[in-house]
Length: 355
Image 1 (cartoon, rainbow, N blue to C red):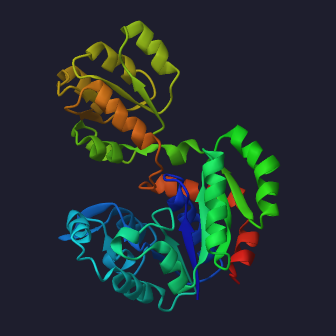
Image 2 (cartoon, one colour):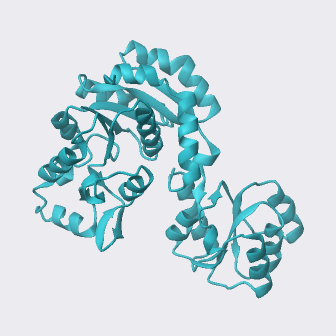
């Protein structure tokens, strides 16, 4: 049985995207594949229990047989963090390894997604570096290459700490100029250090898009209409703070967007609804008039009311846009497509010992 552990040097690099693509690739090879997440930072409630949000989503999307609390046995809920800080979280290693044993039973391969750095879990008493050694996993590093020195130092440090386990790197979410640099300079540099690059994956508009439902959850807003359209994807955010004529011209140049503006700006609401708008985010707790809601309902555009002022709302939206959530069927399909085009699966399988 082979175990592939996905780690990263920096956060928000798209490990889940790579995990989805890798899982699907292994299934295509007719292998029995499991998915595991030792530590989950995204606590949410499900059927009366606290579980990791990503683990729950992956269980549903990948149609996994194991219970979600087995797929991710250590969730960083408020209670778990409190136990950790009081020094009472003494069974982390046992919990993780017992759950992994159940997930890996009868499998040919297990894809494991870590929190990021190999030091993750130290505060709980069980680092991911130790987990990798315990289960004899192969290490696959996923990175974005936003800060070259930090990224390269981190990759080489992982290789020096775990030379036997180290497999290689997939660079993900790359801008065109960075993609060129990876292929021209970084690839031969790392090759000389004994590091294989399995793929250089360009940034993708669809994968970076924010599901409207995620926006609702992050802002804690109230959906005034279009509640059945929350699986739509927002590719851009626009701020409405100008006169209607200028706003219409501006909005026409931005596709598949959410428009963020005060709830009392009916003129901007109407301008936004004349263009490619996926969602209206109305700030300040100010309700729009009935004409706006009727038009939005007619067009199938969700309208979200939030209590925050516009500047605070924009800050939350920008933070979401820097992450890659896969909580959308359309994004899952896109992940398969993008990775298949840009990852050398044959080389990865060779280096990871997958037959």
